Image (cartoon, rainbow, N blue to C red; front, side):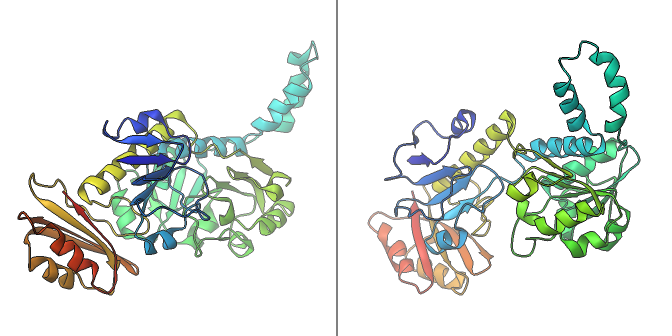
Length: 388
């Protein structure tokens, strides 16, 4: 089994792969899986041997999800693996905004030649004074893996936390971390928050969501924290909000040419998940996802196919992994397989227009190709693979 790495992947994560797996950074030819971090894949043509792509991180805007789904390539990401790293940076971003630490440090650098700097700084420090976060209200947009951790940390730091999260399942999943958080509407949060931290994925529905209309409903002097994606914020609207003091500071981990040159912006060079621990965790999770899919047909944390978890395969049994259009009924697939195999168990999931069905069955010598070839002829089947 060959795994091709498009980026440098943590050795700690690669050790998760079974020893018989070959890891290559030279050639994708013959690879069954691809591991990637930030490398752009939109212009890539994958060989037919590639079964899956595992992104060692959460964001997948560097991967053509729909095209790969149409080609029968399952794409995974690693939600939560870097959550603590982003949480810690988010807290640091709030502190950088509350106190002008950046300005104070720059003053020290500019005056380091002053032999009496320890005295002169007592007069200068007033320009960099700020506020405390204790007792302030933090609004969190998105209470998933990262947002819930930020909420928990902020609560323990003595902040009042208001969460905006439409998914009841997400709230339930993170209920322990959200014990000190009040879930409210977006409008209620905007009226009361001194800080707003955004933790949602970038998609059509969220692109530019921090805009003039939203900011107009916020408190004057609000601080915006963005450790998610730059395109979640409308740069032009943010510039106006900073100029008229509607926004006191905008702290972003995703600076671009516009925001890097704006007054009132504290820009960090995309450090959110850039810790040794986060890179190790993401790589390890990505490696596990590859092994689960390649060896068992389990689809865990896919962003373009549904979740399928059949657990361990019983020794001696085989599995058929069918990626297909949602329009093709799983019953049709099971009927075809059942004509020549003894089905032990099966699982089907649907995600949008795509579906996946995994069937575990017993076999007899000489009939291995029967089910695979027959299922492959069904209209709507994208890819069929047998696991021994």
